[in-house]
Amino acid sequence: MGLEEKLPSGFLLTTVEQVAGWARKSSVWPATFGLACCAIEMMAAGDPRHDFSRWGMERASATPRQADLMIVAGRVSQKMAPVLRQIYDQMTEPKWVIAMGVCASSGGMFNNYAVVQGVDHIVPVDIYLPGCPPRPEMLLDAILKLHDKIQNTKLGPQRKKQIVELEEAQRRQLPLLGQGTV
Ligand code: SF4
Image (tube, rainbow, N blue to C red; front, side, top):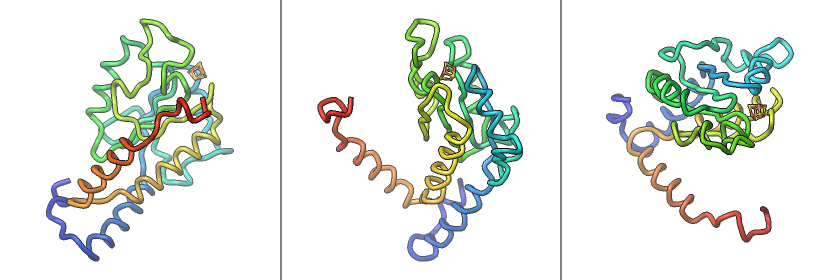
């Protein structure tokens, strides 16, 4: 990230951002983190029928140092939480996380002391994927949405401004309760 701090603002930076975004989104390497039944659907996303290698993701493995996307598939037990965090810390920057399924997103139906009530208590999550389990097509859709996010990520000073704007937008969001959606 050192280079990004030295980049100038303006037209040149916009072009560099576009190229960097395209390169990053086209070469996302997942560190798979299969913990329960959702992992079967995650594995199916890499089979010849769904084939996520179409987006440069064929190198799915359990080696965090060469990975920049963590797909948490399944419920996270309290015992597994520090391991998950350690693997996240070993991944290269910039990195992203998809919480696959209701268990990873919120604990799901396992509302008990043994299961972490959402992996966002342990690592920052970029995409929450609903479903029990989500189909491989849903995972592919989440990956494409993540690609949009990566493509539009700002660099250098613009990144700080973008984070402030995102936080401000989140603060302005009304709670779902009371809108008739829950
Ligand atoms: S969301 Fe459903 S399929 Fe996925 S880990 Fe939880 S119980 Fe299993």
